[in-house]
Length: 355
Length: 273
Ligand SMILES: Nc1ncnc2c1ncn2[C@@H]1O[C@H](COP(=O)(O)OP(=O)(O)O)[C@@H](O)[C@H]1O
Ligand SMILES: [Mg+2]
Image (cartoon, rainbow over all chains, first blue to last red):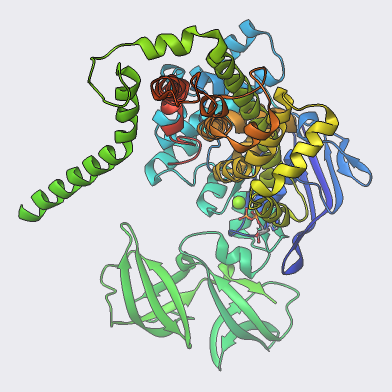
């Protein structure tokens, strides 16, 4: 089912007054897509999911599922009319029911005949590898098992839309990795349109067909994971996506004999080949892997002194001051130790300019 | 080692003192109820005669009182829990202005001294023609126990994570289904303790029952026992004690049956634990 959000806005009124949690969000989510909403905590991700589920009403704007208006001026369809399923961060399993009872719950509410319920619950349980747990109570399960039960409860209904609210954030790192892979496979298999909320950029990059980056309730950028990485639309996206984070430097753009260049305080850092740039103050961004650090000077390099060398395994993360700005760079040269003089060159093609 | 021993001795001594203090009246009650001569325990041997008298003498109406007490208490408990759980659900879950005011007001109302209401209640029930009926007792009992029940249930419902409600709503529940399919079962220990508490309150209540009933068709046990009298106005201690002993049985039975549910953890496994 494709989903369309038009100028979606949500205000909350609290003791401190009215504040806007989501501001004019426009999104088109495609049929069968694994769509990720990425943003720091408090940016309104859960609120957006609640709006999609029908748990909250938008203050203004429209939500349509497959061309049918679900929420908009004078129209509101509640969760019962939307056929969406949701997986919560805290799993939200019913503690008084067994695993079977939990997975069967939405089917019981929908008055599905008993034999069919049994068949569908068993199929969903098999799909998630929790058949052996069907008789247990949620209290007897580990975190990973509970999360599987929650996912089984969501998929057993064959919903049109699956909503995930940070479903992996309560799992430990290893389990999170394994579950992430399985979740992606499961979604491919089922082909159900899925919207997945996370604050973890690695999760977003690995899971999403497309990722929407949200900050303070405003959509920052919507692109494929590689698109976000290679063409960040602004400073926020640039620093949020990728690890180690992108370096951002305040600098001045100058023009010499028709060629643009970026520099800081008279030090010429890098020539810029992008068209349509104007001289004046700007920010440039460059990923740590796009700074070449060498022992000998090369054309276009700037002398630096290495402050810190942190081994990450294959690479070493270097920190140094470049024309007064702290930057980090990745290198494979183990000889670049702390305190050494070296030369850094920004690869001109990899420089991002933010006005 | 030494301090550990001291700690143990103190613990046991404390527990023993408490047990003795609380149980002595009960033991005394049983001893008297079984004695042939109530004013001299043990003299004349032990006999179940008092029990036989209490249960077997129609003019004492003990079984009528017991039946009245059980019915009135059960009705009061059920109605109280029904109303209190709906109110607690509204207060903890629904968007509503002035929740705090409601809760505070309810608490304030529960502070009225019982005696101050008696005169008015008697007049009201007389005018309604309800004196000496179950309704005359159940209505004020429900009103009287409701504030405390509401407070207990609000605190229980409050502990249930809101995500559980939202999961139920997304799973297709109506607000009423959220209450009886999720909230009530999850808060079962709290609901049962509240019901038990209401039952015990109604079972023990004396003043309302004294004023609002006139004979065995609605009179409850506390009043009934107080009105036991010998033929010549003497106090039949043996019968009173036997009746009291029988009366503790339903309460002990209920507590024993429900204690497993009451002690059980509230939302074990609902969320990451
Ligand atoms: N029911 C509500 N009433 C008032 N404020 C709310 C409510 N729900 C969320 N908020 C506020 O909206 C903001 C976004 O919340 P949320 O959508 O949960 O963020 P996220 O899931 O991205 O961490 C937060 O500042 C939060 O305090
Ligand atoms: Mg959230």
